[in-house]
Length: 179
Figure 1 (spheres, rainbow, N blue to C red):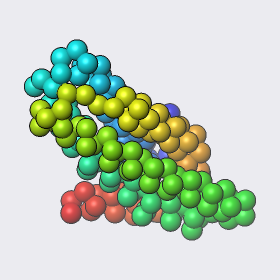
Figure 2 (tube, helix red, strand yellow):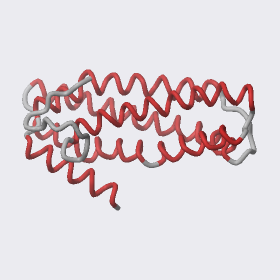
Figure 3 (spheres, one colour):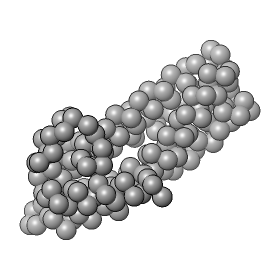
């Protein structure tokens, strides 16, 4: 998906274009989900060898930090800004959408907790497999979540949020990562 953001036509994706940054994060989540699927297959053939341990650590590092920040960016900055900007039918749709996405975040966090336990075992060479249901469920949940955000949330944000509001969101996102 490519967003046409008002006043922002720079090719770089950074905090000055927060919606594009959130979109880019979706690509990184999808990449990490692909790594999880490859890791699951690798473990069946090679066990918890060094490449498996490194992959498990990298996936944990990503979902423990960047993915968590992404959810915070949405729940603490983007969703409130959208709810404030929405009016009429937009306000009702936004409330329903943001509530559903927050519920998705809680579900993804619970799924991540279960999956992370298995990844930690692999990273420490104390286990050599991941529960297929944990991996497949997590990957599928994220795919559905990302599809909803890209089809509905980000286009609404593009339409409703001013450049000034987007700049403030970007600054908050930057400070969250600096902390």
